Each structure stands twice: as C-alpha cells, then as structure tokens.
Length: 410
Image 1 (spheres, rainbow, N blue to C red):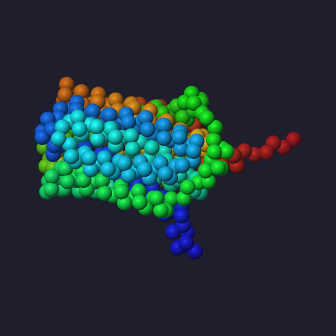
Image 2 (cartoon, one colour):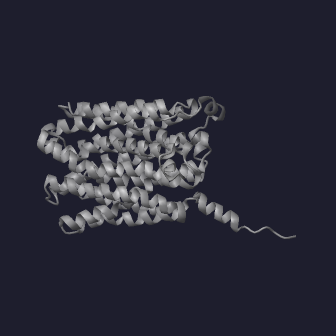
Image 3 (spheres, one colour):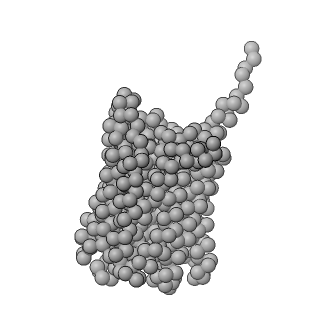
C-alpha cells in the first residue's frame, strides 16, 4: 500500500515537472556562470551582460502571460509545455554558436519566449492532481526542488566543462536534459479533458484579475523578488572572481552553495507555510534575505564563510513558489489559474528580470560591481513590507478559523 502511494501518478508527475522546470532555470542561468569565459572574447560590457538577462526576461514575461491565457481557454497545457521545453533546449545549442553579442542576444530572446510558459503550464497541470493538504508542498517542491538541485550542480558542472572543453561545448551539453524531459513528458503527462476545460473557461481581462487583492500584492512581490534574484545572480559570478578574487573553480563551488540553499529553502519554506501560513513565512524570508547582499559586500573573503552566507541567505528562493503559484492558485477560480500565474510571473519578469539586470548593469559600470547588491537588498526589504498586505490562503489555517467559529445559541 505504501509503495503504491509513493509511486502514484501525483508523485511521479511532481518529480517530472520539478526537473523540467529545474532545467529551465539551468539553461537560463547557464549564461551567468559562463560569462567570465566569453565576455572578453565577445567584447561584452557590464551593460550588455545585463541586457542578455534582461531581454530574455522580457520575452519570458510576454509569452508566459499569453500562453498561460491561451492554455486556460484551450485546455492544451501538455502540448504547449512539451513544445516549449523542446524549443528552449535547442536555444541552448544555438547559444554555443554565438560569435557576436547580437547573435547571442537573439538566441537568448528566443529562449525567453520558450521558457516563459513553462511555469504557469506546469503549475496548473500540478494543481489539478494535487491533494488539498499537499498543495503548498507540491507547488513548492515542483518549482524549487529540481531548480535547487540543478542549480547546486550547474555552477560546478558548467565551470568544469568550460574550463576543460570550452564555453561553447558547455552550452551544447546544457541543452540535452531538456530534450530528454520533453520526450518523457510527451509520453507520461495526462491531458485534462478539453471539453471540461472549455465549459469552465471564461474570458478575464488583466483588470479583472487585479481586482483580487492577493493578485496585485503578489504582482508587487514578484517584482521585488525577481529584482533581488536577478540583480545578484547576473553579476555574482563576475563579482566573486573580479572583486573577491576567487578562482573560477571556487566561484563554481560557491554558486553551488547558493543553489543548495535554493534547494533546501525551496522545500522548507513552502512546507512550513502549509502549517504556519503563507503570509508569515514570506515576510520572515524576505526580511532575512535583505541582509545577504550587504553581508556579501562587507564580509571577509573567506571561502567557507561566503559559501555559508550564500546558502543561508538564499531563503528568499522559498518564497518563489508561494508568491508566483500557491497564493494565486488558492485565491483564483480554477479557470483563471494559469492566466493569473502567467500575469504575476510576467509582470515580475518585466520589473525584476528585464529592468533590474539592465539597471544593475548600468549601475555596475557607473559605480562598481557592488551596486547590484545594494539594489537587491533594497528590493528584499520592500518585499517584506509589502507582504504584510497579503490575505492568508493556507487551507489549514482557513479551516482552523472556520472550525473555531462557534454556533450562536439563540
């Protein structure tokens, strides 16, 4: 019986989708780890490095919302997901062919269009098969475990590949896992009945979605979260090598510690939120994570100390699935879930993924490589304050409040 429960469809789908999204993050972040190996060859400035991240995020934002909305209307989430995974994997191969900034930028923009719909599609597929008591855990695990595990291994693997075989071969190899996962998803994921989805679907405008308090609050939180993440991740590898004077190998290990932190906190924070509430856990995580960028700037250059800092300070990663998926899915009617997740993530990508790296790159050129980390700290602090506006959605707490209401005796 226990073995049957362990290997039921819900759990196997959870693992598959978790690694699928994990390799979205892998391919997206690969460029940050490989920049120190090709920035001089391609003649890139800090502003151009920021644009490689920023324009991918812009494409991600547009396609995430549009494909999320389309999938809600048609019900063909599986088909869109498989196509998207295959395309972004191919774009990793194309990135390895780049001989100029313009060529590499075009490859990253196409990758962004393909990667954008993956999260809203995967989360809406996952929420359909999740039991009520495991919804927070499933959505947190799906978004964070695979990504955290991959990001723990990715820096060391990619740096090793680039060092021994060249940065182009590192890009080629990075695209392979996505093609394997697309094939597995094609044969294993079960599509929800299309007729049922169409009968339940209704057109909703962005204004309609923003009438829900938790939607516009999570939109703001998404902007701050992604600013914290991408302002740092875009320049952290270069900062560790150029300012902190670590070797490429040590940089890879330290970024691995950052990824391990994402893996741990990405499961711990959503799981605790099932018990203690979404609101309190994200507030604590945001405020704690505001300290990490400042500590990174002012701490000593010890390998062990900075690695521990990156691991512990990445607790904000645990907020991503809660803010981007769990709270919207618990707030909205089912027929709007993928559209809402696409909206929350899309606007966050515009501000935090598109604008923040570009601004951080300009600031780094003007004021030094410390500037992106000051921006990240301010963003996390703003997120902690904004999160106080959230309305609680955790089923365990809502059910407890409902049970605590005693009937009035007349």
